[in-house]
Length: 308
Image 1 (cartoon, rainbow, N blue to C red):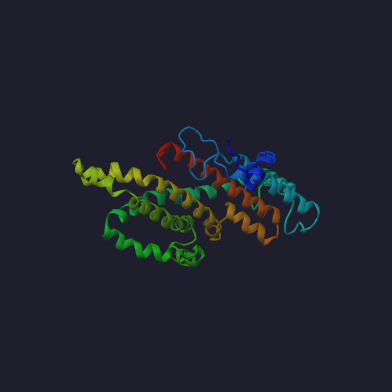
Image 2 (image 1 turned 135 degrees about the vertical axis):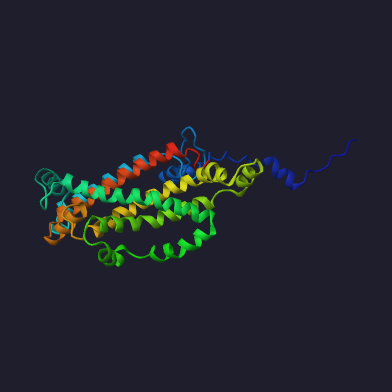
């Protein structure tokens, strides 16, 4: 007769155990993180962009929302009277002052005249800085003698505020237009020269060796290898330099100016006309922003290989 083997207690428990209910589907961590996760997630790329690169994606909508929020906060603060109009006028007061100055003028000149004089001074200094600082910066990158000559001078005066050497410029050049343009020029020269030098130093040595191995001369290497590789840094330096120029404008127009946005702001501050002060600051910022957008457009056209 076949013998029967008794089942072990573990087998009995296993045969009588009830199967556990299925676990609910787990939600993804991104669903919990919500808006923060959406903001951090890699955005769809445009043609020519690399997926996953830091900072990819458009930010225009976020910038527009930021501007609207700031204007709303400004309107709320002035409408509720949390700050006296003498210190912070409302956006509508500044807008009305912009219209009045554009039509009737301020300090014996219209807004267009003030903006024209300031633009002439800044862009004259910018053109002068571009044709002198960029060659000096490139030479500092490729020649140790030039670097030894210019490096201590640029590094010495670069941290100085323009107001520190403004009296010396006035003593040397007087109170005419030349002293104003030279003051803005000096503020632009250092960032332009240093950006050009950094661009030259960023060229991969393998590219230079490859050019020499194919028989290129030193001038050809400088023109066809170093210059294209340094161009993105030079364009970035131009954007930074024009910003320094606009920030130095007010200091430059302290020197016996009779027209200009900086002069208008200084004159308005003496009479506590705060809405004109804010209006002048906004006009300076708008002109600087417009030039920066132009430089970004040129950068996309001239150096499409940047970052790729």
